[in-house]
Amino acid sequence: MTKDALEPEGYAGPVAVFDAEECARILSGLRAEPGKPPAWFKGWAASSPAFHRVGSDPRLLELVRPALGDDIVLWGASLIVKAESDIHPFHTDVESMAPDGGFVTVWIGLENTDRSSGLKFVPGSHRYGITMQELNHRVGVTRDASTDETTLAAARQYDAAARILQPEVHDGEALVFDGRVWHGSHNQTKAVRTALLLQYARPDRPVRMPKTFSWPIAFHERKKPPVVVVSGTGQPAVNRIVAAPRRSKAVGNGVHLLPPARLGPDLASFPHFWGRTPVLTDIEGHSSILAPGGSPHPLHQHLEEEILVVVSGTAELHVADDAAGTVNAERVRMGAGDFAYYPARLFHTLSNAGDTPLLYTMLKWINAGKLPNRSAARRAFVKAGAAIGSAAPGIGAPLFEGRTRWLKRLQAHASTLAPGAGYAPHADRHDVAILLLSGSVETLGREVTAPALFYHPANTQHGIRATGTAPARYLAFELGGRPSPLAILAQLQQHRANRASGTAPRL
Image (cartoon, rainbow, N blue to C red; front, side, top):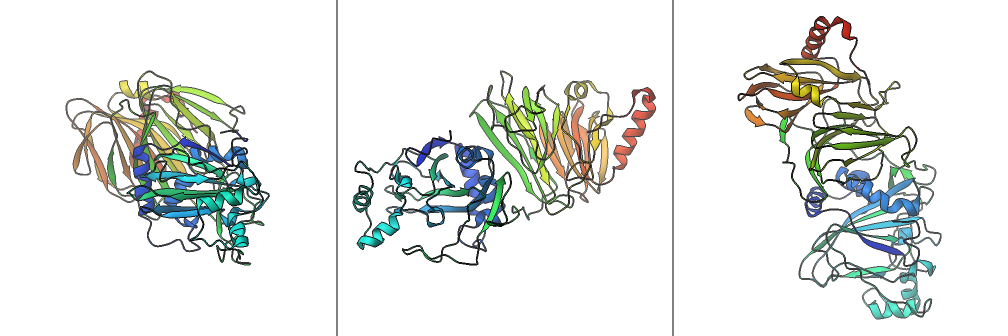
């Protein structure tokens, strides 16, 4: 979407953003949020990890960035539920009605969305310099008496050719509109329509909390709504900037099966877990399948750091120190068993560079509220796949290790277990993520066949034993504290086996 896309009509779209599976997952997460946001009814982005997660999705930020720039705040997030025959009269959102603009709204249909239940617009009304509410007040039209006909009559005072348009929109599609444009809806279906409303602004635009929504509009003078920075930087002198909400649910000690890598939509995402651990305030794990030639999103950055593992297929990773992808840019092709570490604030994306589906798994984490380490690791690409596939049984030397922005220590190593081999249950003082690439193992009381992801938070018991007739091969990532006895033993074994090999590559 270009910078000029919103200017002629005041809205653009629909734009396909989420597939049916993502819509269902997103809606389930949003509905699970208890109660109401503490500040005000649009304040979910500042209090709910689920709302903030979708509101900061890079695919949505790319829709608003051309109009707002690289610095973006999210001030409003709410679910809009309309039953059969519900009418929302034409109006301007009063928080974003300032004549000089700088506000953009994204409306996404999540359930039972079509032309007869979606939004309606008066194209060009963002340039009128006046709200529908004020015009209705001037002529004595109440909210209940406001209709399409009264709206057109008001609009034609400013544009003789004014009209009402209702785009054809469906679940997973977004409508993007200027915060000043006149809009409304009328659910003419026999089903309940649910949409997500996300309201963004430039950081130099003050967001005010209304006392009333009828004209004349009154605002709270001292009470400011919470605003979350979702791209770039904010301006605390202008708005009440708050930290992004973090997940309070603890990640369990568990097994997560990966999906089969088969053709389907351009991108399919499969969440595994999301929450806190004794080591991290927030960690998320998911796997995705990408069709040949596909890419999940443009170059984007975030405060979290990541590990990306290619499980099957061929990926081309693109990283850079700027959004344009030109400063310190690298493009690296990686295959099954290869992995990358992305430090915080690194611009990154990937594409499927092969002719088969690409299956990859990602871990993304942060330690919110904790000072970042001054000496942090840089980007790293570890092409370990070929070596893992031919490695002799045993615990391999570290493939990399080092201090990162949010961890005292991050280490990765590969292991090969001969049939029947393994280690007894024990607990570590760090989190452990294990990605089973081939073979079968018994762990946490169940037998699991590759590919699978095991996550063991610090201080939880876990063990593993290879089953079947073929070796079990896996990557292990240790996040947090001191090296485990197994890691120390592996380092000693490697050192004794090959004193001339030097130290292991470090991040």
